[in-house]
Image (cartoon, rainbow, N blue to C red; front, side):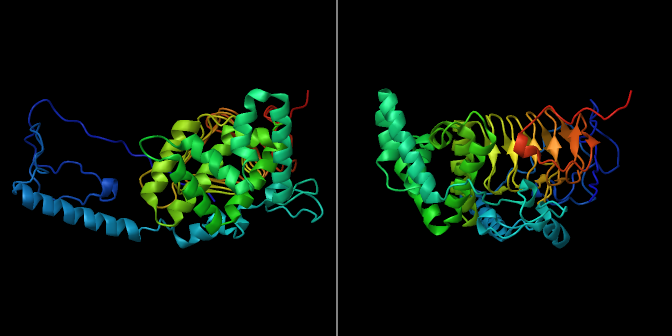
Length: 395
């Protein structure tokens, strides 16, 4: 699908002298900032300060008016489901990843043999992958080994891992002690939120298991699962987001934003609570990653530091990118607007993507240009950020 962008110049020129023109000044649209358009017979604009917003009513009457406006705003917010147009929703699979409904549009259009593993087809457990219980037992063994080899960490490893009886308890304890502070959220409160989320939606923990397996598969710096869980902030940022997304989906938007804001401060990863992430996600190094409100990220996606999935425009519909399954986003890649990046594609480091990209392509540059197509080798399997960016040529 081809994206269409309309750029308009913002602002207008104001003369040094008061305007005497009878022409109606340029006004912003009704959708900008949620304001209504003024009447066409407004007075000419001058340099005098606009005091139309100042009420002449008494303080008590003004307070009542403000309360009425706040109530109306809250009613409008509660009814705003951010649902995109029907055709866009069908194309993008506007579904919660926690529900684990299939997002067919995020998968590769190529038909692969069923016995072959292809990340661009979505998450699929592989023969060497551990179950949740097996993973938990492995993490405990690795913690015991690390505590024996490094006594300085023994107390930390015991309180974080060995004193708990499940992966959910350990994950909740870890996130709570990471993002808690003395002003906004206490550690006990965050831990309770995490446990409520895990109990209400067990797929959040299943997604954490898939993320940990993905990190171990794709990041050669990850030697043990316990390293990923305790020391890799990209993994921890994604798990914090999953709890924030659960809060957002249950109507607790203020708390979701507060927790996401705190996680952004701690991990230097800014993910809006409404953003939809698949499973098997790898944020390598993670510093500076930004994912906007209406962004959708498929399964098996790998992104390096300083990747931005940014929005364009002020629409309440989709204004952020949709990234298909098995996409590799190089360090510093910027994707802007409601574009679609096809499954199995690779975006070069430092590239700027502002148009749709087909599945299994390689794009690089500012703005990004497609340099290779129909690249059926899965980029997230080798994580090679240097190959395939040179055009084929014959001497």
